[in-house]
Image 1: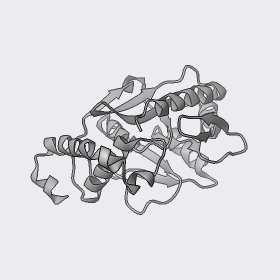
Image 2 (image 1 turned 90 degrees about the vertical axis):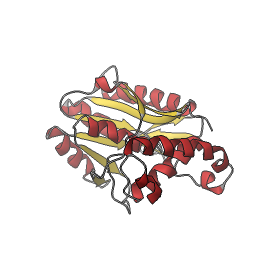
Image 3 (image 1 turned 30 degrees about the vertical axis):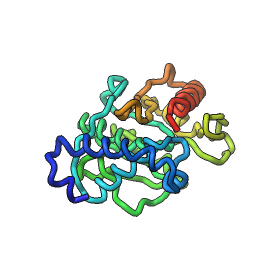
Image 4 (image 1 turned 90 degrees about the horizontal axis):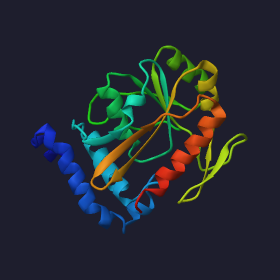
Length: 231
């Protein structure tokens, strides 16, 4: 991967995505694809995820060329970003970095490798899910920060909403949406996928700050995003 260091920075991502998309049909037929971290995504997302991971491990900076939709929905202050476990969501962090905002990511488990804003060597603050995580989220939001959390799960929880997707059944937790309603913090939905030969990062603002409305609208957003992915 050190060969990418020999390329001008502006060429690194275009070369990486071109190679990834050329290899994607072959990866589709391998065990790598069957063992991908998220079945919600397709073979192109998995191929590009692998390429981006190699760049990150080699600490090679790059500038992703993204089709960003809805960034204007972001408020000036605190914001709660909710998504699902999509393979390319890491690229979304570059939008936050370029907007000169700080991000906190909530993770389900400890990562072995540090998390950086996509294409940079700037680390992102991460918090691991624990019994007090909502208190920590509330504190970050009260300080005017931006927090990203995936609210989908493969397993049912007491108050979760069931969603039938193009892949399987998932469960969406409303707890952080209820927190956002209580403290009056704006919520933004996000997801990333490959469309044609570019990665599209979408930001959507719900029509209401009521938790039950946000939950229904996120489920629709989540379902539609998954249905649009090529597998």
